[in-house]
Length: 421
Ligand code: SF4
Ligand code: SF4
Image (cartoon, rainbow, N blue to C red; front, top):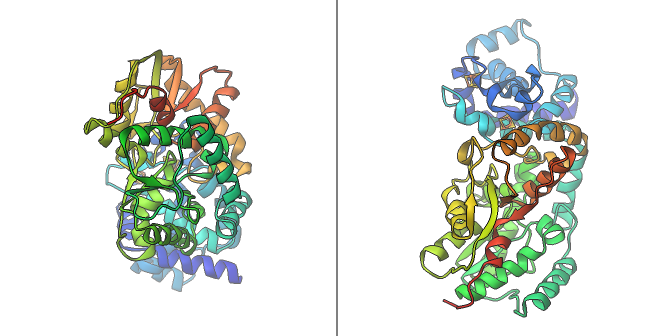
């Protein structure tokens, strides 16, 4: 056995905890998870059945942790997992899974397949079977601090632009602020207007906030590729900055998996509770609305729909907040079929967008989003994840659909009332 395969199999063994063992032993092979996965529904290719994507991990569980599996292994009656097999599974585990969590919602015996995919990626990465694009993004996140290689001067330039545009000063490294805002590299480079929108909203709502010059990146490639040590290191940078600035809260921005990483996996990764609270920007905006500190004026007359980012809605529980906010400013808000916690993924999450090899597949499975959109024919789509926004734009272009894609925070900022709270 090669050293990398050995590392991978050992990583699989370490990842098989009680939930994974329970999930494998309770799977009744009903195949219902297939119909929940856009990679299966849009291709009808049986290898994209969610539980099948976990087959090497299942075999390691069976051979190492079940009586009959051990017996079969000892007498050479079961095939060991090979490097070649892991090589074949690489595209199933990374290219055809966005870790969207939809399959986990439908399993009749409650198997969290997405949790297992996350575990399986740990073994795949250890065995040297992770996609090039994701390896590059992860290396940049560790060495530069951003998967896209965005450094502090680039952020400072965008902050200066936002200050010129809004006439407001954007706080950086302010000790004792109530909130520390994280940003994703995609926001900084592709949607820098998000920074100005936040500045305008927080100014009106009188929110005490800051950005840290030492840890402004929200995304976590360690989670996407499946290397917990790196994921923990990236979370620790945020923890260190938040503790240094003595902030009470950290804001996860309009990025789906960033929220999952810092809010739900973060404390487990660093092995202790945070000294601050993590809130998603939409949770905070909705709280401000409820307190009467976020006031808007006028309504969008065009027909708007909302694309729920999987990690924010289904996996993160932030479902009603964006709707409360949209109802403040939308005259004609329409829900797509199968929305909220059962929304269909855009097809680019979970590191798929960093993996060029998966480009054709992610555009093919965008057909699912097209079907949802065709049912309601919106004039514009609103979302709250910069990765979703970029892929929605790509997918719409691919399918010749001319529908603008808007960020929710920026759209709210455009309707801010004049009076301050
Ligand atoms: S839906 Fe659940 S029980 Fe059915 S095949 Fe998938 S994982 Fe197994
Ligand atoms: S998490 Fe989403 S993309 Fe991955 S297998 Fe399940 S339904 Fe498919």
